[in-house]
Length: 343
Ligand SMILES: NC(=O)c1ccc[n+]([C@@H]2O[C@H](COP(=O)([O-])OP(=O)(O)OC[C@H]3O[C@@H](n4cnc5c(N)ncnc54)[C@H](OP(=O)(O)O)[C@@H]3O)[C@@H](O)[C@H]2O)c1
Image 1 (spheres, rainbow, N blue to C red):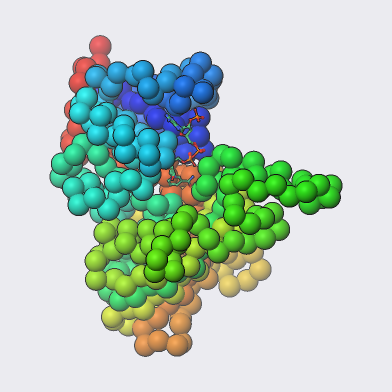
Image 2: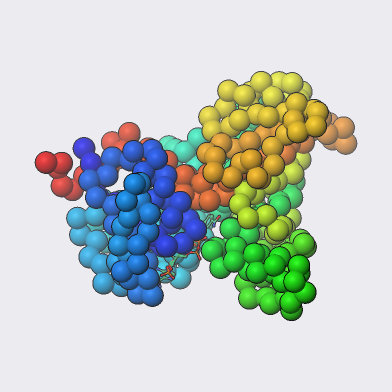
């Protein structure tokens, strides 16, 4: 069986990665359609060995489409996801628009694939990139020793803010070297040779929305009883989010046991040698599928505590890969059937 797939936001960072992941994983697609705004109509995007011509979302008829992978931001998703679902396609959305809707499953397949058994609105949400890699690492440890509290500080790459943000880091870096003025458009402060403790808008609580998203999304995906607190920081890295994670457990768990558990956990690769280069950095994680865990060690300041360093490619596990994995679960569990039978 093969499925007609639409990718909305196909010219963007996540959309282009979705097309790569679909091709690499030989997704059973009868047809892949690349959509973006009218600004991009007619331009080419790479797909496998060839290219696809971008069509305009505004004029596209989704009748006959089985799966729509959305990555065009919240406002586009707010308007379009219900319309696309009403035309019969299952929408898997990367924006924050639907994540906390009670009738929309928020899914990381390694953690809560069963949430896909009830898709009331025809929409499935993909979590925030920082949340996705965090819960992949937390889930096996939670199963083993029950997590009570998580304190996480992130070091998030600029690709998480879209393709224009990557261009801004590049331009500012160049400007520093040639002593040109620094121009800011996407980031509120200079990002080149700097770090910015501000991602998404500020809330009345003093947290940023990115920090709030990590807290509530982790609870929705993993366990509402886990207390989570986050500090989210943008760093001048192109691809790959890193996280320093402090975990407090209900039950005792040693660093050695955690390392053994994580070594056999789905989606996780442990690189933890306690020597020079015996850990992962974003540069090595870019382009890879795994959530890497390094620096596993005891936290002596709490009764049952561990510290971890978690790194993953935010465009892959944090977005495109997770989206495609959700679509694969729908197919493997026969939660979706193609509208048109393959010839
Ligand atoms: N980057 C990450 O790590 C990450 C992780 C998880 C989730 N997400 C989410 O994924 C979404 C996309 O992120 P991104 O990083 O790929 O952004 P991006 O690089 O800025 O790309 C945005 C895409 O949306 C399209 N678009 C914008 N307005 C549109 C409209 N009115 N109609 C149709 N298409 C429109 C753009 O098309 P044009 O080129 O034609 O303008 C482009 O293809 C966002 O919701 C983001 O929060 C991103």
